[in-house]
Amino acid sequence: MAKRVCVIGTGYVGSVTGAVLAELGHQVTCVDSNNEKIQQFANGPPFPLSEPGLPELIMKHRGKNLFFTTDLPGIISKSEVVFVCVSTPTKMEGIATGSFDMTYVDSVARSIAAHSRGDMVVVEKSTVPLRTAERIEEIFNSVSSPSQRGKFHVVSNPEFLAEGTAVKDALQPDRILVGTRPNDEYARKFMNELYSSFPSEVILHTMIWSSELAKLANNAFLSTKITQINAIASLCDCSGADVTEVSKAVGMDNRIGNKFLAAGIGWGGSCFGKDVRALIYLLRHFNLEAEARFYQAAHDLNYLLRERFVRRIHESLYSLPNKTVAVLGFAFKPNTDDIRDSPAIDIISMLAAEGANVRVVDPEAGHKVKQVYGDKPFAYNILVVESVAEAVDGADAMVLVTDWDEFKNLDFKAIAAKMKKPGWVFDGRNICTPSKVVVSGLNYYGVGRGVIRTQS
Ligand code: UGA
Image 1 (spheres, rainbow, N blue to C red):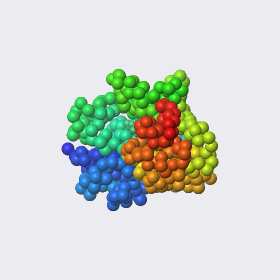
Image 2 (tube, rainbow, N blue to C red; image 1 turned 60 degrees about the horizontal axis):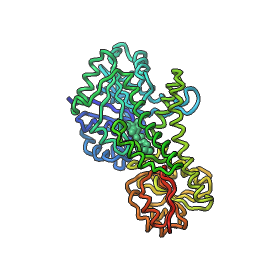
Image 3 (tube, rainbow, N blue to C red; image 1 turned 60 degrees about the vertical axis):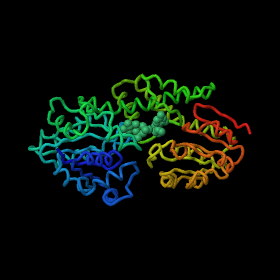
Image 4 (tube, rainbow, N blue to C red; image 1 turned 30 degrees about the vertical axis):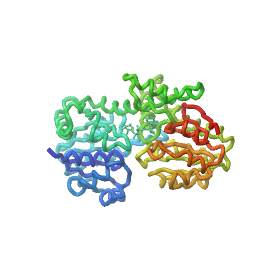
């Protein structure tokens, strides 16, 4: 049976959640306090964010069973379930630095408490700290009217969507995790009905604290797996081994698996850094210092890789002032225009601050370059261009930062002809075939693959 759903927050999580719930047949309204964003969703394309498959879903359901509004009280009062998809950024200063900033969740919980009518399932979809449900319940119990008390059912249903494949991930999930309070049969039944389009074995019911923690644990596993292969890559660089071969060998052990073993300049994005920092905070909160140090080391190594990569470029080019460096990629990963915590930002900043002239090309995120560097003293060193050919024209080096498909089969002969000599390719994502690069007359460095010099 179709449910009346309200989705609060129209970032990546909220917009995809809303569109997918509409695709499942529910009556969905997405709410955001940002009117400009809501107008774009209501009237676009263009939409406020780029995610494959999302525009098609929005246009298929908009005006039928998918709506966009800024009227939070109005829509809460008409809904039977609210998905909380507001952002929970890292708290960067003051008390509890490193933990999640819960300002938006707190404020949304108060609105839900004030405007709900009858039984209301409140779903934690954003990544939240452990035992957030308890805090939300406390707000409900103190703010809502006496007749509403006992009618709230807080559920943890974290998202496991990866940007670039979020719509596909949501429509073909590995699992749908549903954490509920003991004895809350209403919530369990409601969530089963909400997700009745999926086979029942995909739905995993747990206690609510396990579900909240599983989301953090999931991202901790994935990010530390990448950091592990990157640590091995550093050893490869010193020893002559090739990390892509080591990674293939290790990944064929089916206890380990071959995913998230691509070595390079490390992870970025809005999730891994934030969640690992929150986990470290949580562990320290419980005096689990040794465990906190484990994740802290992985976190610190991840960010050190960016600096080390630039040091490698500096060392190879001897000096950076007045050198021209073509940077391929600005998004934190392919198939998105999201640049949050993108390694490209740190790498470009370091290159430009050292005096290099940087030309940036990215299929979707190029327009965001100005937003990031506009007011920096070295901003005049950074130019956004439209094509790889333009970026490498007269360049001393080409630096691959994002593994877009467009950058995977480059014509290195043509590129070498445009670049200065000795030209360099620094492959931060190990997407080139080194032999094709060096045969074209360019020197090559891949993370964990060492330096291969051209014979010409
Ligand atoms: C990640 C998780 O994969 C999702 O399951 C989770 O739902 C999401 O965070 C979230 O918490 O919202 P996402 O950050 O979109 O998704 O992207 P990933 O595909 O996980 O990539 C993260 C970073 O790791 C990227 O910078 C990527 O380039 C890097 N990466 C990934 C590697 O360096 N090596 C790999 O082998 C894989």
